[in-house]
Structure formats: C-alpha cells, structure tokens
Image (cartoon, rainbow, N blue to C red; front, side, top):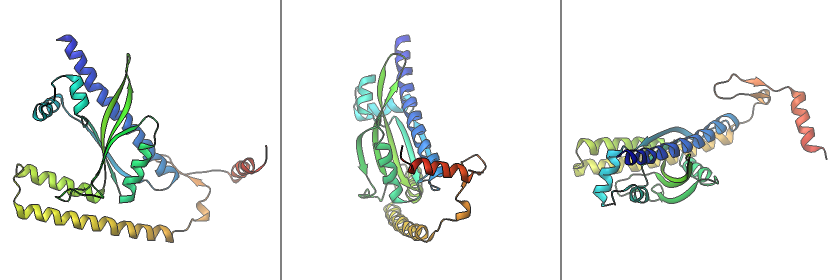
Length: 239
C-alpha cells in the first residue's frame, strides 16, 4: 500500500509539474507581448487538474485498464489549461508559438473553430506532451490546452451551466437557442477583429514616447538618447 501510494503521488505530481511548466511558458509569452509589442493576444489563462476520483471514474466509464500506465496512455486531459484570447487570429498565433517550442510536442489537434461542433461549440484543442524532470526519471506528460476567444469562452460557460442544470436533458428549443447564440458569437468575433484591424491601421507612433520603456508592475523609465545612439552605431558599424 505504501508503494502504491508513493506511485500515485508521483503520478499526480507529474501532471501538476507539467501544467506548471506550460503555464510558465504561456505567462512568459503574455508578459513579453505586453511589454515589448504593446499588445498581448492572451487575455486570460486558467488551469485545472483532475482529481484521482475523477480519473478513476473516467477510466471505468471508458473501459480503460485500471493501472497507472494504462491511464497515462489513454486519458490525456488529466492536466488542462485554457487560454482566452481577444480575436480568432490570436488563437492560431498562440498555437503556433507553443507548438514551435523545442520541448513541446503536439500529439493531437482538434480545430472546432474552423469546424464547430453541431451544437455550435468553438475552440481550438491541443494535446501536447512536455518532459517533466523528476529526481530519478524524465517523464513525458500530456496536457490538454484549449484556446478560444472571449466570446467562445462565454458561450461555452453558459452552455455548460445549462446542461448541468438540466442534467444533460436540455429542451430542444433551448438547444436551438444555444446554437443560434453560437452563430451570433462567431459573427461578433469576425466583426470585432475587422474593427480592431482598422484601428491598428490608423494608429501612428507618438515620437515623444519613442524613448520611454515600461514593463508590467514597473513605472515607465526613459533610456538616454546617447545610449540608444550607441546601440545603433554598434549595429551598423563594421567589426
């Protein structure tokens, strides 16, 4: 029993560590975009870890082997991360940035944005594997990542609450209303991104702010013009 408890603890910790590592990667991207590019495609990030009870229930329901290796091979959403973006193009941008990292392997992708589910659900789902370095092993661990817009997330949250309230037996009229709401949310996403692109095209850089740098949590600070000139000379002068 002691050995089983130890293995179960290691099993659950590996998924927590994998989730923590992916969250670190995502938050680095978010902070980099906010500080350097003046715009972050990531609005919000959340994570969850299935409980041992929930994992066991899913394994029994799906008929998977009730042993850790079998569960690891068959249940790939034990660790989950949800990324909420402003616009549809941002979801694919974040997908590409994460998939391009050397220690992240995309095992499976489902694009419910280009091909929504019949009920109107939209989201980009990734199953990725990331190495977790334990004291005595390197364990590849899977994490499910859902990337969606704010409108998609709002719709999915409402749909989940409705299905929970009706215990899955949702009236047909309400199901149709949800589908129509999903269509409306999709049109809103497209319209808002078009408006955003028009605003960006009209923006101009204020030369008075050219030498001012700021980071989240820190006050803006100037870089002396002489220092910037030195950097520019170093980039243009031959060695």
